[in-house]
Length: 330
Image (cartoon, rainbow, N blue to C red):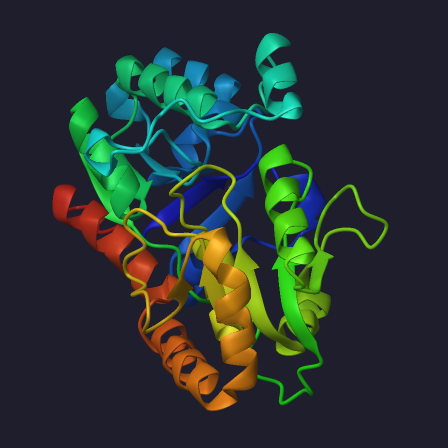
């Protein structure tokens, strides 16, 4: 058994519950303590796991530098925020930012999570040499990390039962967009789909009256949905969490083309198409529910049986144990 101290900036909002990473580690038999960026005793655990964006934890980073390396826990980072595309993608790294992102950069807001701020955060972290094991999210980030010379291990965003499952509800929502609609690019794409006659229901924005969707309400919404469309925040990016949520709850994902969408396979687990082709495809699948069912059935099986958080965290623990064989055995 390994003892983990998991840093997550959402600790107050979680109200005593734990995020999926921590829950899965506990289900595997490991000891887990949650913390914010505060004065936690770093000597009380085998592994300090920084989840998502290590830039959220400047105080902890400084405290690690102040402790002799022999006295501090192994530091593991699971970097889950978007990064610039690798050169091999052929995608311009100078993606446009929305006004909110630009404002955070100008104000030096520590909550900035655009791809350029994330790049700087990761570069600074690696220069400080306090990370023992770096995990990056998906194939695209794995390529990016190799380009930068980082010793990084890939992890995939997986399914957990708390993400929902099939409920057998009547799917009375033809097309759903789940997420923030404020970025100008997404608004324009949604307007284009509506102009082409597609009735898109939008849910999950922090800036709409219906608010963000979480938990049981989100599960019910996705179980009522036939098609979930993915319009990217940055060109070429795959939104694995959105994919997993939709597939677990039986909705067909139609997405803009992504660079390295693996482990998901276009045509098998989801449908890939530029926005200009989406109206025709949406009408096709709504008119051919058998074809839709073939994809959603395989996608549901794939995420609930193969692309799971259990498998992801087993890989994380396996990597840690292979590098530090005495971990948890003293």
